[in-house]
Length: 358
Image (cartoon, rainbow, N blue to C red; front, side, top):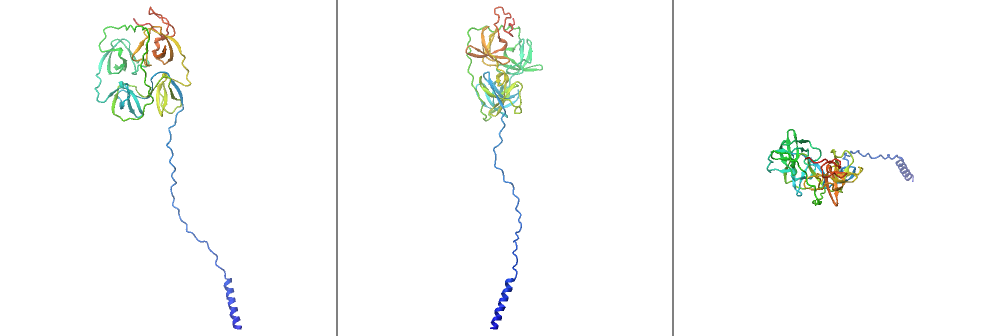
């Protein structure tokens, strides 16, 4: 029994010693540091391309037929890419600024025979202009039989040079032969019944900006207009009223048309905010004529002296007039506010009218 007791006691002591020993404290696992490679910032989602800013504009009312919106001006000797024919009077051309129209009379295609230069003689008082439309004051007035070098021929005039003066002369002011006498002119005889059977005009919007080039042509006149489009009497156009969008041309409205900038002479349109023109009744002077265009070129109808007209618009060199149901254009010096004296060729009313030279 003692042996058994001793064995049991020894076992108890051994167990007690084992339970009393301290257990090692747990330690945190050491996680090795890892370097995350740097990556580029995520690309931003694609955005819409920036749009061109649109200028602040005001409306202007066109006062004439066939008012041009001019894209740019070309000079004599320039070469221009031609796309093709637009109508009987215009070609479509391609420029750095865009497509436009140029009058056929102002272009000569590569390969065509050059114009043969000749010497002409002027009638007394022949006027030389700086532009082929004969707008504004002449740059020179020439005497009888002044010799000029004729460089080219246009529809209504010649490109000429005399001394240091270059410009354009109306065809009726020049002769191929030396003039032996001074023509009195005599003026046109007063007409009877009025018939303004002018041809209708084709309304042209901003022309299509596409087309393949088919040839090259030489420009014949300084100031040749590349026309973005034509507008008619009563049309509204947008005139830029904010600076910094397009260069300004003196004497022109800057237009904003379908994303393009173009130019229209100020005397062809009345912009919003400008003083409206007051219509008035007047009378035609001696040898007065009425035209179908504000340039006063081409065919005309003679009016009897003191034909009553209503002046609708004054454009500097011209008036827009109505005669009955017809509308036309007259030179300002051929319309007066009061009736003209007839029979003696003397003065009378009419403001700026002067008697014809005898």
